[in-house]
Image 1 (tube, rainbow, N blue to C red):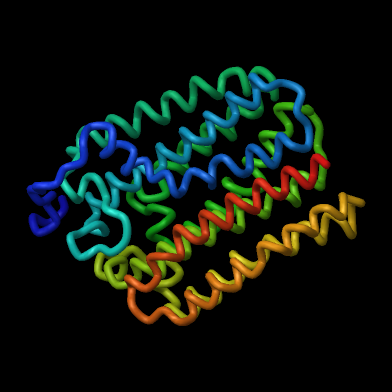
Image 2: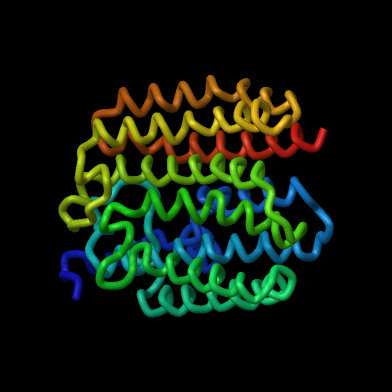
Length: 302
């Protein structure tokens, strides 16, 4: 049971019914689900219906994970009135814990239904990946030993929102293994992990109190800043690898035009001293992530 001091406050400024669920779904993080699917499908697009199902499946996994995070972080005391950054629906009293848990189940249920045509296309073996994606979405903050509370959040996000999602989106279309797709998948994985690190830097103080032992809590903010620098900068190496090793189009080098944005975000991260000073990193990282995704796809298809 969580302590009474973390009970949802009575708010005079409740968002309306639609707004509270949109806020709980955390639109700024949706790019983590959209990007790997779009990048993977850009290598082979044979069925727009399968692409649509893949995209909606990835979004449901992302939103379901966000709902589960909202519910379990409140239950475990990680989300309190002292938390910085975007408001959390359960902690604010906008959505009852039971309603959030029900929404989590429904969203993951929809994800499974959307995965059925994907499983039929890719093969029965892909059923394991579907179940694992849903399970990890729950266990990220749920269960007796949540991944995020053990410092394994970065690894989960890097893998499942990177090569797994990207290659999965490609395989559904092409039914083949293609190494460049696997390598390209690390770009969205790295960016998605940068979003997690930005949040962990912002929430380090409250996470420590709640015993949410992220890598930032375990090893300190200096380590977190180094993490963020690596994860926000490394995606720009991916086009170089694809060009040098797999004869990809030199148009991919245009991604370098976005690096000044990454450099500014890195500078903000290193200058930040207090939790609230890390807040702009999430929006800035999401914007860079989206721009990189669009540019990568356009340049790859040219």
